[in-house]
Amino acid sequence: MQARAGSEILASALARNAVDLVFHVPGESFMSVIDALSRNHAAIKLVTCRHEGSMAVMAEAYGKLTGRPGVAFVTRSPGATNAASGVHTAFQDSSPMILFVGQVRRSLMEREAFMSYDFRQMFAPMTKWVAQIDDTSRIPEFIQRAFHLAMSCRKGPVVVVLPEEPGA
Image (cartoon, rainbow, N blue to C red; front, side, top):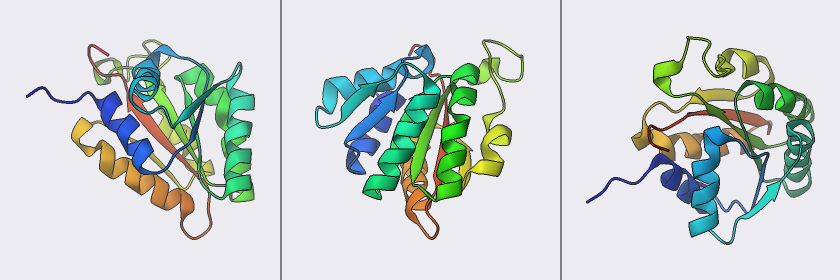
């Protein structure tokens, strides 16, 4: 029996949490997730955007208008920093939002390779929680916690960092 790829597990977790829209600016660090959503989850509409800043504002507005987390995907450093103002707005306005940030493979972290960055440190002051999923088997747990925290008490943004999978 072949193990499921992390991207497939993540796509299924989004579907289980009734996600109907995913905003993204295409990026190599999370394309396997977008492919998994396209192949297996037709009920989730992919909204392709041209800039991470406007994409994050769309996800924040979705959260504000629906009361459900706006879900967005960005690639590492330039994508994440461009999305930061939308995350900050979600924090200030208590809008539920989950931003997934693609990251380099774990073996390349802390080498200043391919624009990697410590996103936990960057986003901590403007989110309810920032986490990096380092173990594929924990994806469902992390996604459940992200949705719970984005929606509980004072609603707000959560950032989940996704290291690239080998072979993805």
